[in-house]
Image 1 (tube, rainbow, N blue to C red):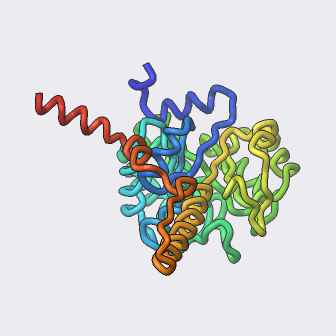
Image 2: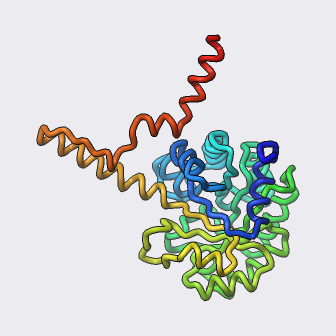
Image 3: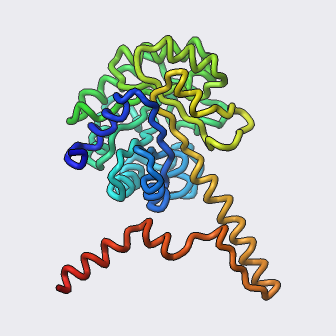
Length: 298
């Protein structure tokens, strides 16, 4: 039954169950497969993580729509769980947003974030963000809703207004975005549990939040308890930086050990740092290839 459902429908069903959906951030085939293998019911992409990993540039609008869509298409194809995408500002006006929605929907994505920053946008943790007029953003939301062919495809309206207009200004915007029909709202830069509670209580739409690394504090953002966010009524929590941060940490340590081994002549056997070939092959489903090969050969 579940297999016959579209990914947008499955994402809707997860949200309708009433339990907060935890959505780790994926940025490549390994990470998205690992999220699914570890039992998480949904995943999401981060524009920053894809720009960093796929293009090797900061998240300042260099990665364009088609590059983003193609990266997300490959990730969505690799797993059975719903994958939500980060579509930045929609790459232009309300007209551009319509094409953006169609492209991501055709790529097998379950829904996307649209944000109210000016273009080129700035990554959420950078200073100097600017936001467009609320009415311009509501036009983008309305365009996104008209453009989707599947009514289950989720339109998540993100605001970066806390950094510019404070929490009260962000709440006014989120209310307007919900009234325009956004399926979910996403306030970026929330600084306290009290602000989370205010936003959840003030907006008549499910609230999604991002918590960065998830298990490590950042200088300018609080380290929220995931369970507490669920108790406060948050519908979905994204953890976009967890896996990129963990991968960079482990890769750096492994390269240090490789260099040390080359200098000292001592072989390193660190099973605590490196996955085995068996684990890699299981994660990437090499058994399916072998089964297919046996079937064809038979």
